[in-house]
Amino acid sequence: MSRAFFVTGTDTGVGKTAIAVGLLDAARRRGLSTAAVKPVAAGCELSGDGLRNDDALFLQRACTTALGYEQINPFALQPAIAPHFAAARENLQLDAQNLAAHCQAILDLHAGFTVIEGAGGWRVPLNSRETFADIAQRLKVPVILVVDIKLGCLNHALLSAEAIRADGLKLAGWVANQASGRDECHDEMAVELGQRLACPLVGDVPHCLEQSELAAHLDLNPLLGLL
Image (cartoon, rainbow, N blue to C red; front, top):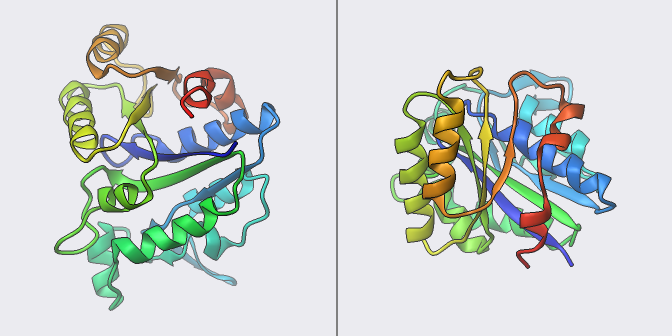
């Protein structure tokens, strides 16, 4: 049985890619085939192979399914700004239906465990009408919320969870991350969110781990038991 999840965050820079890579590694260690897609990435750098994004490359290396870069990241944008602004500067139009179709092509490979990584938070715009949430809605996949535990995260996490559920999607679980370092109120905020988010805690991940160490701090059991 294949399982797929949309990974979003409470903001940019909260460690979505690190957590997505950790989830893929944890799934691989359990004998599952893995795949990933990051439909839009801004801040790409020009290489001999074209525009490349470090986060998308990390995801590509973490997959057991052989995927070309363009399958992982079909829309690579050079300006390191909000995706819809970056697309406009390159005379491109981002569209939820088109992006969802790219993601669906990866889902149709039926890997045992697939992650779709958004950009920034849940309501990051794609264009004047749509946001990244519209991609997840079209795919109808459960969502994993990555929270950087720091001052302000309670509000950001609770609002994000409210929006995800209001959009008709299941909040499959959340991750307490320490992308900004360990906050002095980490334990208190993690407990508070655990009580209020009403979904499984997939992991409490320490600061500055090597990629190979992430999987040990992530529990796939709540995710694998969903479907």
